Length: 214
Image (cartoon, rainbow, N blue to C red):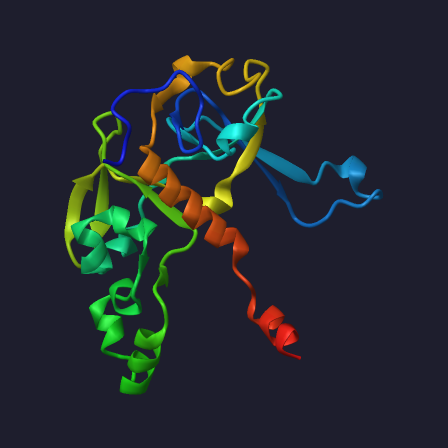
């Protein structure tokens, strides 16, 4: 079960909300004191139909919250038959062969295939977490090179799109505008989201591995 059948009267990590805006500052580079008067920046304001709560349950409050918009899937995801069967598989760890489209896998040398298969299971598409289809989501068209055009209503979040929003009505998880809440993840799914976002932020870059070995 991806979603909880009954909504709790409390804001939770992973909840789907309606009614909040998204803002993205755009700059050409750091603004120095000399440039400060030039207003060399823009801010994109949008009103996504749905947003997802990224603040941990116990930290929701103090008139602020972290959100990320629900967005459409990328058509390239449909090049992998393992994902086509169930797009929420992207949320879980898998072996390297499952994570790679067949036409890309066969191009790898036998040695490289063996090396990858000897690695432990890991997340593919580490920035993304897919939300299961639901009747409240509007359908949209995917134009896939392999499958052609078809409609779907899977959505996803991109961990790179997280932003903070101030809201006077959010005092704590219970004293909050609960009318904005329209979907709640099951305990199992919320754990999967927590695990993947933790993995996204805890990845160690190769250069750090090298320094650790010195």
